Image 1 (tube, rainbow, N blue to C red):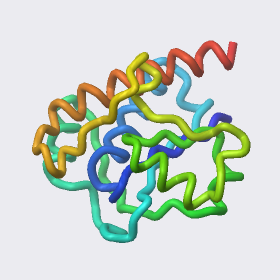
Image 2: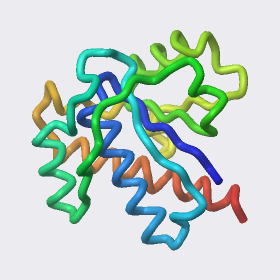
Image 3: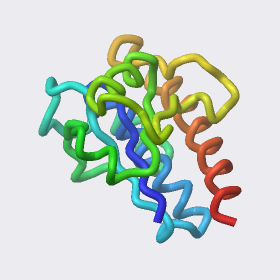
Image 4: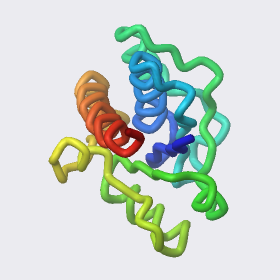
Length: 153
């Protein structure tokens, strides 16, 4: 089983969007039983809060639900439990390295790197562009899934 943790600052917008988009993609590909997918925050600001309503609405526009998801915090002990840690932006990558102490096994990636891009998924908390965030996250998740399909052949 491939274990993926999507990570953003608060775990109420981008990382839960990625979690549920990726769950849909692997299910649609008939690979749902090959993956464990979740998401977390690098901060404590939103712990216990549900997915932010505009993010939830954007997911719903695409037929994706996210009920029952509450923000959780990334922990140092998670490093040995997951195969991939996928951050949404440069700050997430820096904070993951700080939390873990290092990335000795090369498990940390920026989501858009799976699309051949090096930029960040902009934070819709500030931009208010949940549609743009969704489009970038979906592209990144599709790229990640394409890479993982090659690995599991």
